[in-house]
Length: 347
Ligand SMILES: *Cc1c(COP(=O)(O)O)cnc(C)c1O
Image 1 (cartoon, rainbow, N blue to C red):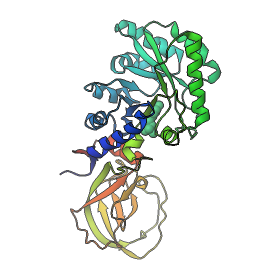
Image 2 (image 1 turned 90 degrees about the vertical axis):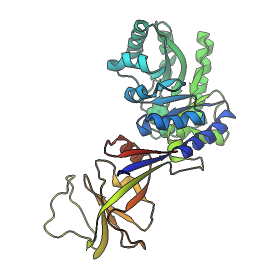
Image 3 (image 1 turned 45 degrees about the vertical axis):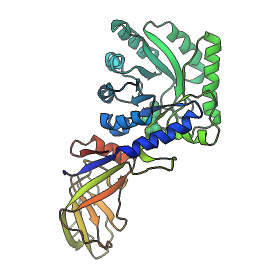
Image 4 (image 1 turned 120 degrees about the vertical axis):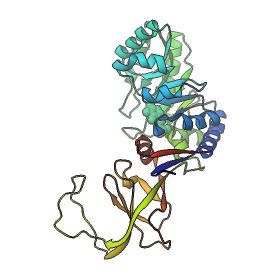
């Protein structure tokens, strides 16, 4: 084994997807599995596909490129850059859009590649990130209908990402209402009404999801088990102890700046037994990891070192021992992004 490593429990992930799918199926909502939380790792995406997702989605083309081996459509989540239009058409079956200039460029690329590129028009429902304003939606649909190489397959929205707006019957109700308006006015059928991410899932359970919503794009719910009451520890960090010593809890000498340009503050708790681990801020923010042994305390980190207070633990930790940590979405993403962290698939 090589450390630090991030262990991925694939069966737990598949079970999380299956469970959410059962609930979504009952409401005729399809699940698009969002892979950006683990950098589009194909071995992990496979667990989503096994669980029954209807598509895979990522915000980065570089990740989507790796996901061509599955027999499900690929969605680009982030509004495309003009500069990546050719790759968007090549590697994404569907992209989420809000700018006519970009959609026109995608259309030109699609014609060049002899394809019809599918798009979902994103609506601004209050979270003030991407999306066209409600009053402009019909004009956009009109303009899109005139663009060669493009097929408008649906509308969608994103909430609780920037503004922290909670999805509810009102904002998603508006999305559903707009879908009907578009269908009536333009005599078209919108296959997809995409009602957001993990944060929209609670509406299904409460019976408050507007009927017209038929797709959710979700990642966090599977990675963290959020709101599912299932497996939460799908991803775990393991790091190796490189030093164990009893040391003062406060530094000695004049205090300048630490490695990250901050003036550190220490509480003097006397001499404490501490462990130094070979993982650091270059890999993960120590505020977003939690030792599985709850008697261990994360004191802090520098670029390549993590420092734990192990004084309260009954275990006799030694150099070479491996410490396990539970992760959240942020630390999972950071560890998956670090090329110094070994990715270990556990079947
Ligand atoms: C990240 C993202 C999602 C998925 O969010 P989760 O919280 O992981 O479910 C869905 N839609 C868009 C546009 C996103 O950027």
